[in-house]
Image 1 (cartoon, rainbow, N blue to C red):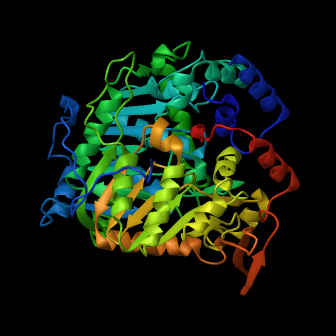
Image 2: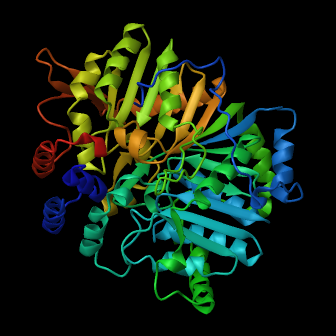
Image 3: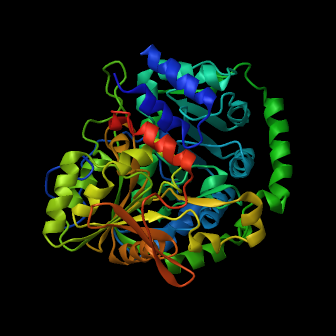
Length: 547
């Protein structure tokens, strides 16, 4: 049986309390990312998948977005185009622009859809589209929904909107304590989360990457802000994205939210909810600073987009939907995201960048990293520090192997919670008001300055073996260069610590403070004694496979 302490601390995150500790104790009483073999061809590794194409994904070239997509794609043959969305406010704006321009369909698949400003803004945009006759479908994993997701039920009760939960568990309207006990009692629900993040509009444009729907991901002023990354796609790969959504939407793991939440909201209640959201969406304070979008200027947006797209051969890596009761939910030929990334890592001959919110390698994967570095490959690994990590248990799993990662010859960087590039996005008074600190949520890799991956996949055992994941894999030197430049900025002095080892094999943190190189030792920088004590306590948990 998986270690329930590790599981629950992973789910709970960094801020623990005595109440949560009691839940963990009660639950306990109840009961190869890089290492995959194989060769890759000279281009992006291909897969042959007999994916079901439902009627809802039939092409419709008459919509405005379809016409714009065709115009952008003209002259690019089988290539797809990608916009790198490094900034959260830009990523939110493009989701809003596409939703406002939709005429036929919006399909959204996310691990999290929070009941906060960003969640409300996106709901309002999708409900407004539904009011125009657009068919809206939203699929959310139930692992981290609110204890009483009535906001999702009201959303789903609106005409032309369908909301489904993936692997719903536990009756709603329960306290969080009782809900977590339900959660711990069903390990199938607990362990295999749908971590995918996908947004497809009119089967013409798609967004995938590391962002869920919530303030943390879109640079709202707040106590905690994520550094993340998405790609907006146009071209042939969008058809695969639409098909990927259908695989999960049609699986036996999904349930209409009306089957889960009681009482079911009426259409009148849903319309009243939309009226509240309409008013909310009119207020400038409902958006992050610097947010700009205007769907009425879609032609101008598309002209600007044409100049910023990176083109290349691409595919959407999609994990198969897990079996249910021994019955396959999707084709067994689907590539696992981690398998393909492992093949690319093995073949890398020049340079490899991995930026991952959670970085925990299996022993055989660390051995492979030894081999990669021994070939002379320059390897840069970037992840969270203890001070920036929102899941302390995941950090502890990484900390156990931190020195070993450096010994491979890889350069290792940990994000600073006061990263200068992130602070520059906000007014000083907002930072002071919220006591803001920053964390890394990007899941990105670049191989040989050519192959770029941006998706939901963390480089850890959970993403490899437990969650379902997805992401764009693009053969594009220009996109790879742009992402490398972005990562180099993230790991530069003032934004990250480079972690090195002293003569006694102890970690040292090297960064820049007010123009001076500073080396820190003895303890993880910018952490409290309480956080370090919690980390030490979690270090005794023997099962890292849940992290």
